[in-house]
Image 1 (cartoon, rainbow, N blue to C red):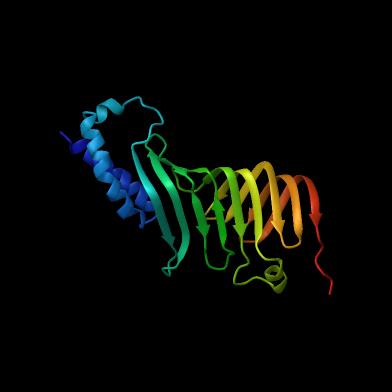
Image 2: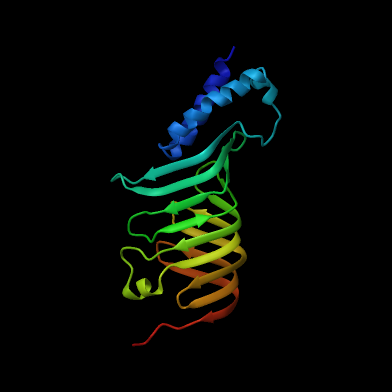
Length: 210
């Protein structure tokens, strides 16, 4: 009688690992716990109508995504991750996303919580969000001299595959030349631009003309 939950669990693992093969071992480690919970609840019929309830979780989560050359282009870690079958989203506690795609600066984002959309295209970070963009291998001497750019806010929407991070909330931007505050921001990691939309204030030294 446990054939259905077993197939369901395997389907969940397949969907998770489609985003990153490195999730396979962690997902399989949680599979036993999930099946045991299904046995205790007398099968999946009792899960009908539970809404946005999770069906599987993993602690000390880590996933990697590779480019065609086998180089790590994305890594995602969290204290806890849990999958929601109603929309295929994944919720995280204390997530850390690191983008290291070739020809783009390294971008690291941390927060208290986060959500990865069901299509794996959007990551929403919430609470004490901190993003650090470091000068990339192709950075100009001026960009290297400026050092890393750090932004802090309370909500940040990241499109990992496009290297774009954006928020419509108050944001603080810091680098070696100074600090600015504003409301709303778009950070494009491919074009190496950061645009604050409104309410800009603070102190920011202009680039040297020498």
